Image (cartoon, rainbow, N blue to C red; front, side, top):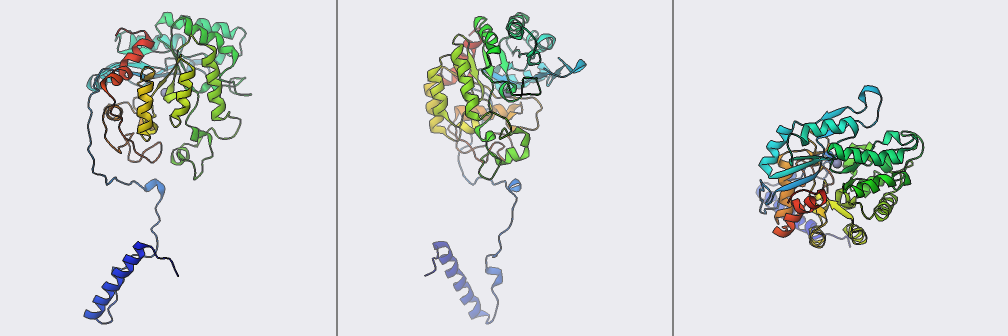
Length: 404
Ligand SMILES: [Zn+2]
């Protein structure tokens, strides 16, 4: 017997009733207009913008419950490589006065501009943001990768950290240049490993000078897998194929994390802020293991509330257990266009505050018509005041040595 599901059965009964009724009143009348079209309507995934039919409370959180330190922002970029006049050139993405308006509206006490560069660029960036507005902007320095090949680089880079601190830098930022782009010949040859011994003096200098290291060494695990129909970040990677680290000579996701763990283990006096929830927000069990193993490791939230918010029960437990080790960050970039989850402005902060403070259900993690980092929505954690206070500012105050 042919299997008929309940839906088909009901449709069949309905059609028969309609057909019978029409047939009786208008013998010979056709009933085409009553039938469901047989052919499927093709629809490009890119055009699919489903609107949720859930009727659930929506809370607008215009200001954070407590003052916030955003430890992960990019207000400027300095070119760390390149030739001649481009080298060391700084691009300011916002005027400090423009950013301060958003900060005051949202209850942001401080923004940490991680990409401050080094040398003259660093000094220029500090003069632009940090000096005129003490306590509102802090600037981190970055390593000078371009000198890797020069004799005495290790010592030079360690001393550069001390010089940067004298110039006003409040920490070191390491981007995924280390591990995924920097090569033995800078742009050619084999990739330099995250735990390369040449950087040991630099990590040690940060520990000795009490400068925290904000480090980003891996993108989401899906970026290391084929861009195919099984990849949960398919749309994002398909739009930006250059974001993929699958194949070629790239290390695997696991290799990168293990190399990073060896660095953290080797420098116990250096405080590491593993950005983007330790690069592994999809696997909180693994991040928890690392936090248990390394007391000098901390994590930060930027661009990962989409991951945390789709596992709200596990995320809530994670916040409860590691409430002294989690820092607030967004990866905000003023006037960014490519990544809606990072555009600096009121909307971005309202989403983060809603996620941390409310128990709202199934809402967008980014201001965009389609969720940009995967087609799902998130659930609020409704964190208690004590945890909010720590995550919003107390943990960062301690690590950055700021007045409470
Ligand atoms: Zn960033």
